Amino acid sequence: TRPIRIAPSILSADFARLGAEVTAIDRAGADYIHVDVMDGHFVPNLTIGPIVVSALRPHSTKPFDVHLMIAPVDPYIPAFAEAGADIITVHAEAGPHLHRSLQLIRSLGRKAGVSLNPGTPAEAAIAVLDMVDLVLVMSVNPGFGGQGFIASQLEKIARLRAAIDATGRQIDLEVDGGINVETARRVVAAGADVLVAGTASFAGGESAYAENIRRLREAA
Ligand code: DX5
Ligand code: ZN
Image (cartoon, rainbow, N blue to C red):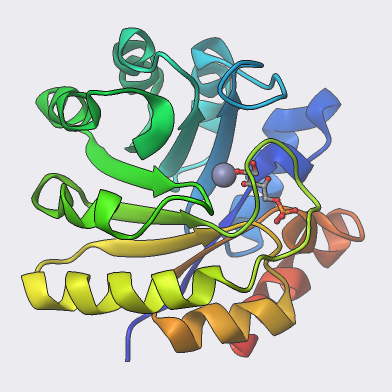
């Protein structure tokens, strides 16, 4: 059985004390720190840029899993690599040159991920599977935390699990959006092995974080 990793999204953290929140969620058992970058253009919300990633970097030793919901994306990839991102994920829908973006990420020595919106078929990631270390299936329309899980994505997860297994390579299959104890169980059954969770990780304040992560891991 695959080890399940939990990637808390700091989008649900207290932005006024982000460094302390990153440290707290790391100590509570996070495997990756998931950073949601939004540009008010590719998605209808604005969040953080490389300067914040760089400021947060000393606050955790866990891999920074940076999810770029921005278009164009290529001009910003070097700055996120420089800021300390370990995994840089770009959306297949962000532009006509997905493969070039993945080449750029790898040329900077970082792990490359491809993300698919709910309306984008699995084939968009399968076409570039040889260029990625992670596939991120969005189970909500990206832009905001706290939305409801879109169950039609389970079939896409299963298709991607089969395609990833056929490569024989280690490629993370991550799911993002509406993950809680109940949906965690369903996405892992479909083949996911990395769970992004914002609301479910940061609920109840700092004293609850370890228990939140433990419950997600146990459900999976
Ligand atoms: C959505 C972001 C997600 C989001 C997840 O655009 O990519 O990472 O913060 O939040 P929850 O877990 O609350 O659905
Ligand atoms: Zn995300």
